[in-house]
Amino acid sequence: MKISDLVKELEAEVKCCGDSLDREVNWCYCSDLLSDVMANAAKDSVWVTLQTHPNIVAVASLLGLSAVLIIRGATPDPETIEKAIQENIPILTTKLPTFETAGRIFNLLAKKV
Image (cartoon, rainbow, N blue to C red):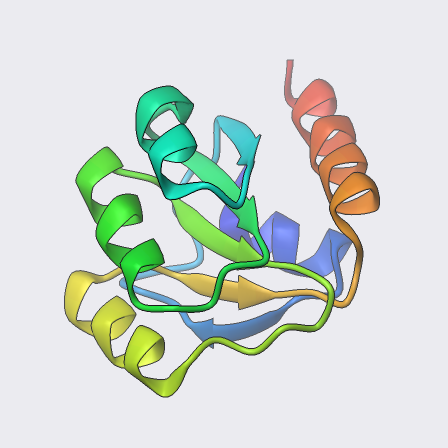
């Protein structure tokens, strides 16, 4: 699945797209604890979170995540967008809650298999 598939399925807004919306997404990780994400998220995953501060970009970059998806209509801080552009990390937002977001992503990934 590609990031562009997520944008369509989740009615997501692209805040910054890194180098491309064609990046592959192989899994999803949902958490608002940075330490939890660092310990458990897999490379090429989309990270679903309510966090909006610049540290999310640092974690995504460190782990090689495909994108960060901010839920419930939250807006990333301007510094977060700036850092995401520098680090080439796509940032998306959706108005959907975590449960529905994760379910839709799961269904997309299940079609891929």
